[in-house]
Image (cartoon, rainbow, N blue to C red; front, side, top):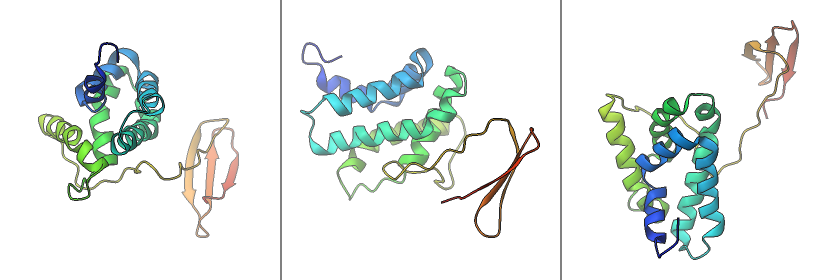
Length: 168
C-alpha cells in the first residue's frame, strides 16, 4: 500500500468508513484488524497523534470483532458505522490529538446512520484503550444468566448445570 510515496493516501484510507466497509465486505474482520495493526506497528514514521489514533481505531475494531465476525460480511459492513460511532463518540474538537483525526470518520458514520434513518441517543459501547473485559466461556449453550445480589453471576445451560461466576 505504501509503494511510490502513497503513505498519506494509505492513512486516509485507514480513516475512511467506505474503505473499512469494503475491507469487511470482501476480506473480513480479521483482515481489517490486521491492516490496522500493521499500520500501527510498522509505520514508525507516523506522528504521535496519528499513531495513537490508528491504535485506538484498531482497538475499536477488536472490541467489535465478536459481533462483526458472527454476521455475514455484508451485515458486518452495515454494523461497522454503529460500532465506530458508539465507541469513538463524542469527539471533543477542542481536545486536539486523536479527536481531530476521527472527526472525518465520525462525520462519515453519522451520515451513513442518517441515510439509514438511525441515530444513537447515547453512547453505550465500551471505549477503546481500557482493559478488555473477561469473556465467559461455556461448554454448552447458556439459557439463563442472572446477576445475584452480591454482584456475582449465575448461569444456567442446556446441560442442566448452574455455574456461579465472580464478575470482577
